[in-house]
Image 1 (cartoon, one colour):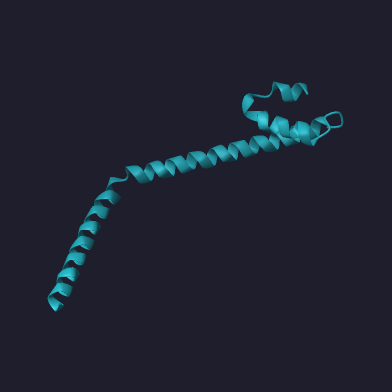
Image 2 (tube, rainbow, N blue to C red):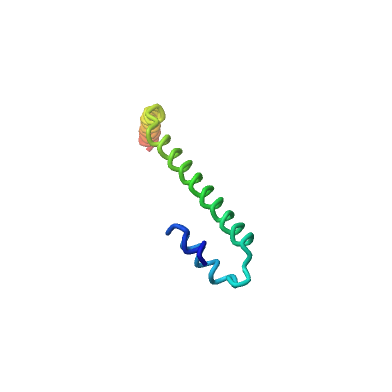
Length: 92
């Protein structure tokens, strides 16, 4: 119980899960440390994934070259639609 009480607030969910799932009077120190280490690795991996997602999104938003290409492609599509619509009007 002393170890679980000493953990920071962000570990509260894990502490609660351990308290509810295990009999703390029979829980060995090795089991407790193993469980906490596993949770710490999960936290670290989750944080890394979030950071990668943020950097990918940031890179996509700030890429000006792709924006310019998109605008020129959009203009080409508008011209094509205009030409096709005027061709269909001529046939009518």
